[in-house]
Image (cartoon, rainbow, N blue to C red; front, side):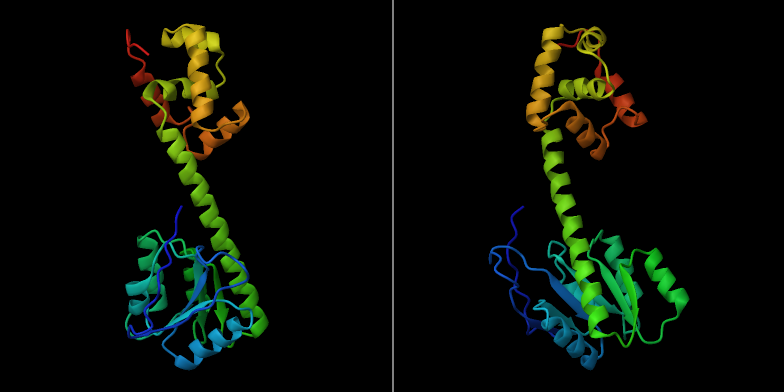
Length: 250
């Protein structure tokens, strides 16, 4: 997946950005950003200063609405989010992000919220919930964990997208063969059920392995499971049966 670097306009009201690149990575790669969303300027500056000691790139935002205006879902990173803010609150922002299908890890930070608020936030997918004041060590560890978690999620999504592209390339007939193949049927049984010769089934199998870049049947089955194409699925089984039309040519 190609990422285009998107500059955050530091002139936009409510947004203060600090640009730095970590390590010796390529400038063409997106560097994770820690978004600090808090209406208190002192808190924003403190978190930014602490994270700068680890050369972490930050973007300070004074309101939830300002964050929504500039947030790019393709940008890796995490969100340090205050609970109580004027206008849209932290939990309300989390709810909006959930509606949009955002995967950015959210670390809530609050000086007043109690256990019920923390539990509610975690139930709705928050990565962590910290009580102010937050020590340097705790902040750095939790942010590092959140960034690692986000990187893992995005890598998994990229892999899933690549597999999806491969499986989409299969023809309807190849999908039928795939369903029977991962169900454990032999070439002879598949040929009988589909009204094909065993040689034709072998050709389809070879095409499937090539298109999905599978090195073994075990790998093909694993990928099919991840793509939810296993024949144990009632929907897939029904679709497979519907595709087996009498007299249909391969």
